[in-house]
Structures are given as structure tokens and as C-alpha cells.
Length: 256
Length: 256
DNA sequence: GAGTCAAGAATTGTATACGATATTCGTGCG
DNA sequence: CGCACGAATATCGTATACAATTCTTGACTC
Image (cartoon, rainbow over all chains, first blue to last red; front, side, top):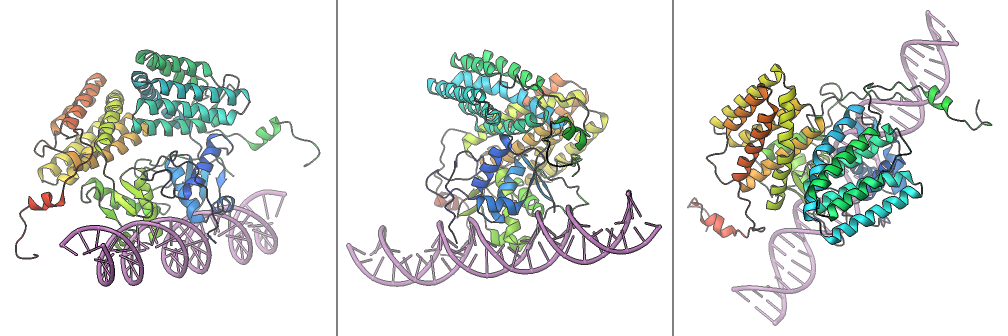
């Protein structure tokens, strides 16, 4: 019955108030579901608007709906899923307004955080960032866009962690997660997807302990990111199913 | 299969992603427990560290533990309660380090938000703020400290709402909530508890559409608030129970 | 043929049962 | 007298059962 040998994935990642040391206490069971879904959403494996039925998720992760429900609630609090009463959970679809606000919040917080990081960064921190940079580069080069986006977010979070402000780090983490959804919805230029250069410059500024440079680089990096989005002011997008399907080369042979 | 016409209903009430209008759909059952506990914590009716047993809360609110559990999870995400696996839920006890970080985050976000509010505030907004001010004053004057603290927080949130940045408003809301806990733990001067004057000046600056003034006033207001706290660097407080009980005039007659 | 309505199916909401873990308290030993 | 150990109790963790709601589908009417 209790055959669930749910291997603890990564207790440190779950940004929640749980006083639990990694190895000692069993990391709450829903964290596996939470992390799995989160990764899937952030890496764009699950598109915004996708329904997330409790039964199905329970089957997939071999847990009861109780656990799934907890995970979904946590994701809802992160604004990665939308809980609609009596209807179920759906991958969130941030509006363009929300998208703008996310980037405005990032523009306020992250430059400051980058400056802080540049002030206190030690060699070990720089090493960590450079390793991050490599991972990112590799994922991007391998064409794994989804992971590249996730890693890009994790890079920003890593900077915040170096700054040593855990609350601001939580904010950055949340904002980056939501940015991932925003990118999935509103990204326009697929070619310029990863300005890894900007990240590299950022690391250099932090390595040189130049808070001012780091602050400015982060600001312009975020502006660049924002400029890659299509956040024009038509709030509703009445895309017709026919338009979408018509514009895609359909595999002839099956269907009408 | 519609493309959800997700009109942002009211993200201000419960800080969670629920597309639900107050009256129409049943507002998820746990929100009653959530709000009740939150008020009790923010108004210092429940002291930090207090255990919150699921059964007891279920009896009080006449719901099953399932509901209580959801409410507690939501509160944990707000960092108002601490969930310790297999041990239960406790009202959070922010450390001094956390307290400092909360106020550093507020010092980063709120001045900017106040400036924004001053830019866009309309007469109706000013009226709202002045009414807030009165409520605060009244509660303070009536000696209801708990509510005064809550209202003070709501004032800051109201400013953020005027600024029209819902995400930053969420941040401010969370930070103010945590500040309430911090005040419960580390407030030192009980007399100067409410610098209602600072709030009044803030409203004036916003009313005059003076972003620069509003920004500076908020900055100094937060500095003042912080200076009222005892956040010295001894991380652990080895207060002995005997000290506390010994220093209080005990009602003689009962007990040993 | 389009629209409406209702019965059935599917999914979510809540309560409860039961196993697992922690805490308490009594007992015995040093 | 203090401490260690173990049974009893209390509380939490998870699964499951059942109720409530929504969605689907088919028939019926206009």
C-alpha cells in the first residue's frame, strides 16, 4: 500500500516555510508533484491554459488527489496555475498587463539586487555563476529552448542568492517563474532568444565588484528582455482555432 | 474551450490565484479559516510560536481538517505560519535577520511605490487614504493596539493599490503582514507606536502629486519604523520561563 | 438544421478513516 | 533524586468514500 518510495527530489528548491533539513525529515510528499509540474510549466512542456486534472496527476505521480491538491495550491500561490472553483486547475495565462507589471517589478528589484551581489560576491560565487553560464550556453546550443529559459531564470535567482537577501531572492524567483510563462505566451523573436552575452557581462561586473556596472547592466538586460516581448495593448486575443490550424502545415493523410 | 476571459477579479482580498467574484461563486471554504487566522495573527491575538492544531481549528470553524490544512498551507506560503512536518503548524517567529531583510525589502519597494502613487493619485484615492488615516487614528486612540497595527499595514497596502501595480501591491501586502509579526516580537518603544503623523504627511505629499516628496517621506518613515525595533545581533533568545513568570505579579492564592 | 433541455458521465469539494510519527507520562534503574 | 526507557495518548499524513458541481452527449422541439 505505502509502496510510494517517493524519492526526495530537492528539498531546498521548494520555496516554502518548512523547517526541514534536507536529509533528516521526510520532505513533504507534494513537493515531488509540485516540482515536477513546476519544471514542466517553466520549461514550456505544459502550455499556458492546459488543464491539470487531479486524478490524472495522481495516477502519474502515484499519489492520491490529496497530495496533488496540495501541490496545485502551492503552484496557485506562485501564480503558475489558476485554480477555478469547481472547475479545476489550469496552467496560468498571464495577461499582457500582468506581464508588464512583472517586468516593472523586476526592473525595480533586480538591478538593486545585482548591485548588492557585486558588492559582496566572493570568488566561489563567481565560479558558481560561470558554471551557470555554461549550463545555459550548452542548453541553448543544444537547442533545448525550454531548459534554456529555465536556466536563464535560475541565473537571475543565483545572483539574488549571492546578494544574500533571502526575501528579495524569493521575489526574484517568483518573478522569474512568471517571466517564463510570459515568454511562452508573448515572445516574439525566436532568434535572439538568449542574450547570453548580457549574462556574461553581468558576471564580469559582479566579479569586478562593480555594483554600479552590475546595476546598469541588469537594468538594460531587463529592458532588452522586455523589448523581445509583444505586449501591445490589445488585451484579448480572439485567435480563432481555424487561423492557428490553417497556418500550420498539416500532416495530410489523416482527418478531413 | 473558450480562451478564458480571465478578468482580474480582485486580487486584493485573498492573495491567491482564484478567479472568483466575492458573491457569485462560493468563495473557497478555507478562506474563512485563512482570513480568521490571518487577522488573529496580524492583530497579535495569536502570539508568534503559538501552536495551531488542526483538530482544534476544525472544531472552531466547524470544518474538517482538510479545510484547515488548506488554510494553514496558504498561511505558510505567506510566511505567517511555520509548517513543521509531523509536528504541526505554528505562528511564525521571524528571526532578527529575517526582520532586517523584510525592512530592507520594504525600503527598496515602498518608496518607489509611494512615488508612483503620488504620480497617479486621483481625489477619490486621497479620500480613501484620509479615511484610512482616520480609522487608524481612532483605533490607536481607543487603545486597540492590535487593530492599529493591522490598519497601519493596510494603509501601506492602500498606497500600493493606488500606484496601480498589483504585483508590487502583493509584495507590499506580504511584507506588511510579516512586519506585523516582527513588531509583535521586536517592538521596543510602546509609546511611539503610531507615528500617524508620518502617514498624514505621506498622504499630503500624495495629494499634492509630489512623487519626490512621497518617496522621501516613505523612506524616512520606514527608517523610523525600523529604529523602533530591537534587532540587535544576538540571534537566539535564551529567555528562561522563570524570568518571564518571575517578573510578573502572580495572582497568589492558587497553585503551589 | 439549429437550438434547448435533460440525463449520464466525469471531475472537483469535503469529510472521515486509518496508519505513521511525535509527545507525554509513568515506571524502573542507576 | 535524576535519568533512561517504553507504553499510552495525541496529532499529523495520506488515502478513500461520498456529495456537489460541471461538462458531455443525445434526444426533442421549433
